[in-house]
Length: 139
Length: 139
Image (cartoon, rainbow over all chains, first blue to last red; front, side, top):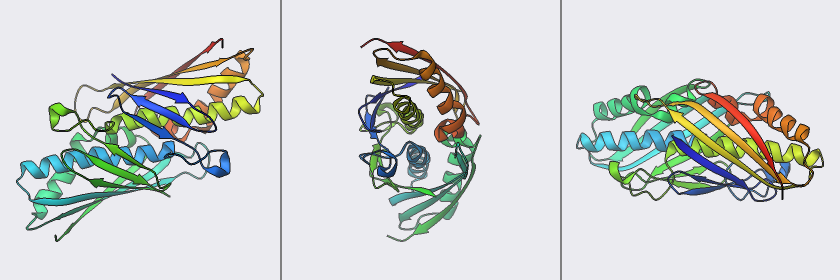
């Protein structure tokens, strides 16, 4: 069981505190009455899938003794035009930086996360088509 | 198009920066090599659905001239036991605080969010069964 207690502050600002004890402020666009003091709720999903898959990929690459100097996940989400405007397509680009990084290791790490381990990906893929690719860049 | 750039820091710590310009630190449990400096990625989904529906409900209740003094959304998520351990069930409890709050208005606001407007709910319900209830409490 995982929990979040989400408390209204004012305007469209909410503070969400989760089981881990950490809290995040969320807010709405200024055009709709928010004050833009925190991320939008839909952005939380893209952040979450990036963090989830990133933790998988870095853990697997370390186990495979890869000398990773940097890892970035660029997540893009397309929404439906009509309400409820859910995510229809999400793409993740994994950018691994380092010296002598094995392409096989990166391919396998990304696939293991996407196809086996990443809980956020598995939750979101019921609605959104999720695609992914990777790049390896030098130090 | 909504985007997030998720950058590895160290351990299992990532910083996610979204289109709105706001950033959130995520981290893993200490038992799995994290340092617990931020929420878990799966918690981001529960926070997101609470914030999304909360923004809908507060906006609708204000339009309905309800004198809301407080709003809290308690979100609980159950995960599958086996990998990828996706959310299977999510419950939202909306707690509206105020004087002379119309139960009809609250019922309608919650239903409009859950069944029509909330983008996060619509995205998550492809995988998880989402249930909700509400309570009205005095000032």
